[in-house]
Structures are given as C-alpha cells and as structure tokens.
Length: 510
Ligand code: ME8
Image (cartoon, rainbow, N blue to C red):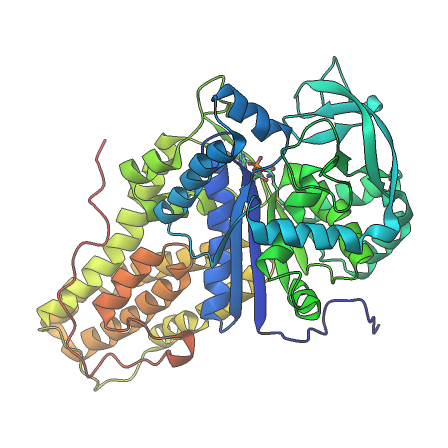
C-alpha cells in the first residue's frame, strides 16, 4: 500500500541525524551514559562509512528541580554548578572516542531561543489551568495517582505533592493521531516489545500534560509570561534535538532532517520520546523522527547502580584499566542491544582476553607474522581452491550482511557476523597449516595468506564502528588506511607489508 505518511519515501536518503539522550548533570557521567552514547556513535560511524552525511548530537539537560536542588546541596548557583558538571560529560566524550558534531547544553542561548519559538508553535494546543498532583523529582515526571505505591513512583522514586498554576498541552487530543501514526509506521518505535508497551499506554488514554512550572525559576521562561512560568524540563529537553539542527532558523530544513533522525534513548524515557515528543512535533508542524530505539539498562554485579549503594561504574576508570576498545566491544557483545545487561569487570576481562586478544589478536598476528617470513610480500601465481574462494566471497560480503542488521540497530547481530568471520578465518588457518605449506608449497601459501588478508581487511571494516582504534591499527598493518568501503579492492600483491605491532596487550593468564 502506498501511504504518504510512511517513511519509505525519504527526500534526502543520504542524510542521517542521530542523537543520544541529553544527560542530567546532577551526578557524574557513568557507564549507562557512556553506553547510550557509544551505541549512537557506532550507528553514526557505520552510516558514515556507508556514505551518509551524518549529524550526531549529544549534550546535557541542565534545567529542572532536580538540578536546582543538586546545585543547592553543592552550595553553588545552578549556573556555576552546570558549568562544572557539563564539563565532566564533555570529558567523558573524549575518553570514549565519541565522534559527535554537536554538544548541546540546554542553558545555551541558542537553545533558549529555540525552545521558546517551539513553544509558540504549540500555542493552539496550550491552555492555562491548575495542576495538582504527585511529582517525582528524580524522574522529573508527573505520576498518576493509580501508579503510586507506598508513596513512590513506579521507578521507586519518592513523589511530592504539587499544586500550582500551570500551562497544559492538549495531549488528550493526540491519542488517535498517535495510534494511527504507530500503525502506519510500524518501525517507528523499536524494539517491538517496547513499542507494544507504548501503544497500550496510549490506548489506555492520554491526559493533558502540565508543561510549565511557576514555583521555581531554574528553567527557560515561558514566552509572554513575564518570567512567572518556566517550561517543564521535558519540553525544554526534547526541543534540544531541533536546536541542534539550527531551529528556529530554516524550519523546513529542520523538518526534513528530522525525518531521517534516529533517537537512541534508555527504556525509561521512551514514553517521553515516543508519545509526548511526537505529539509536540505534530502540533508544531515538524516531521516526526524516523525511529526511536529504546535500549536496556545495565546493573552492576547483579545490583541496580546507585549513588547511595556506591556501586556506580565509572567509565573513566574502566577505560583506564581495561582499554577503550575493550569496553566498547564488551558493551555490545555482552548483551543484545535493546536488552538489559549486567556489568562486571570479570566478564569484561574475559571477553577482552578470549575474544579480542586470543581470537582476533591471534588471527591478525599469525597471518601478518607469516607474511613477514615471506619478506613482507605476497605473489600471485595460483588459482583459489573452492574453500579459499568461499572464504574470500564471505569476506567481501561481510559489510553487506552487517548492513542489514545495522539498519535495524541490531548492533549485537552485526558484531556477531564479524566474529563468525574471525572464527572461520582461524579455523581456515588451522586447517591450512601455513607453517607446513611454507616448506612444501609456496604458491598455495601465498593463496592462503591472500585470502586471510582479505578476511582481516573485511574484519577491520566490520569492527571499525565498534572499535575504531583497533580497526585503524589493522588498516595500518595492511596498508589500507583511509580507504572507504567503495574502494575495497583486493590488491595485496604489489605492496610491502609493514612489520605489525601487537594488536592487543597480552592476555593475563589465570
Ligand atoms: O533522563 N543503564 O537523563 P539521565 C543503561 N535528561 N543506560 C543508562 C543507565 C543504566 N544503568 N543509566 C542511565 C534523562 N542510562 C533526561 C533525558 S533526553 C531529551 C532527556 C542512560 O541523565 C540511558 O540512555 O537520567 C538513559 O535514558 C539516559 O542515560 C538518561 O540519562
């Protein structure tokens, strides 16, 4: 069926916008933040390799009661507090090798302007009333009476009674439009199980949403209210995505890019992105994003991470102790992207030792070391055997296969495809016994090594978005640095291979 609202007729198919959540700055960055950001980074790097023109934004969410109270506790003004805390997130981005184009802080002037113009676009759906009800400061969320158990929100956070004059957004009038949109765009929300939760939430009925606060001032002033009201932190925060695209300039262009936008969010904030945000965008006449992908949560050694327990995993330490690519690999190998996972240093150490140092590191090392025995040069005077041809073809096809998975944000599946090629190449090496061929059949040895170089090259492209530094190292070993997919040409025979260094530090035994 041809459906004008469906997302298959993109105007600019080669443009991609990818976002991370913008993080609250009331605490230090932790592994959960690093996870969401690295996930987005992997998607971005893959798209870039695929020839897309990508815009990648991340940042910090600095307004709201939660941040205001944290600043008070730290005995600082919210502005001073935000400046310090936002810098920690910027530092994290360098440590995790994020390739973002924009780091947006909601306290920036460009954002204030954008959020205020955005608000004005919603005007026809906004009215003034009185809000009275429960509010969870930790979640920065209003909690319906029927969801409160023992004075707590479903997340476990304490709720407080609020009663104040407020502006409301007519969310209730978007129920049918949203349900129709979900139906016409079945891939709008992923994974499917989470999408079903959203759909049933909306089917249960939507209440109008309080979108301003008048009892505190740490926020963006609502236009035309003489500063009496500030925006509800979520409407402010969600608008960051269009701020990053240059809104309020060039609304048409912003709208077009939004159509090609993938929002990566944690499962706990899916409702804001898949219900409120689309309703706001519909009201403002801006296109809805292409997809909202909700990822799962990490616990630490089986326990929920929390400041009070003191078990929050610090990405700075992990990278220092185990290496960045080891962490980037672990997070997307340990659990399927979209599901919950448990972080443990033991598990990370094992994966780094077995999968990386042993399987991948060994493959690269032994093949390249062998080429050095041939004085760093390969010759061609042979035909491939059936097995050699099959492995060669498989390598050539790797990126295409990964592509199918990455289109669905199946990062785990894509990575598994590369790992299968690593295993198969190791098996092939064991079976072919190059150390024996060296003595009896040098032409065959050259064929075997050429096929293995091809698979190592494919593997390097395959891991590039997950482990950029490791991939670059391998590209260097093969003299293919800087070449794009499109230039994938098997041409190992007219070059001098450099002497390789060790790909990963030697694994610790025992
Ligand atoms: O919600 N496991 O900010 P936030 C996995 N400012 N991911 C985790 C995690 C964990 N244990 N803990 C946090 C906000 N995250 C709002 C967002 S967007 C317009 C506004 C990740 O600092 C996960 O992606 O609470 C989650 O959605 C995000 O950090 C929330 O960060």
